Length: 111
Image (cartoon, rainbow, N blue to C red; front, side, top):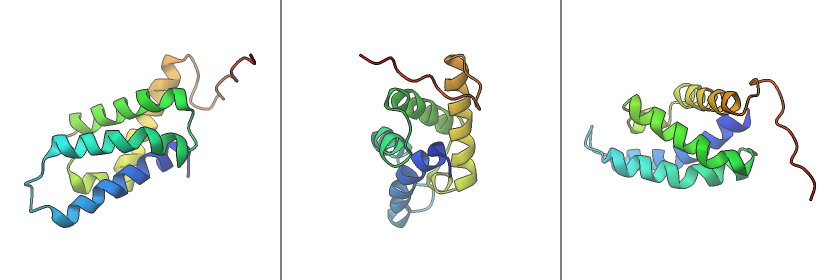
């Protein structure tokens, strides 16, 4: 499992706990996205092993894509959908950095 998949899995599972208290489609999506965003960066670095400097841009991208696709609670626990978003965002971040998705990021210069 790549770090992008791991990074999205934990907040998705935590937010998935809200499924138990949701009544049909009556869910506060803004609160759901806020909860996801609050856990995403920590999970991206801690659980996913991603570089800290990419955590916030990755999470912002993920939330933007979830909003654009009108994600609901069930989508947050759909591993295929979350993996697809993670891969899209990572590819975008790598492209912005001038790297291919299969190229390693440069090591930071020693101080």
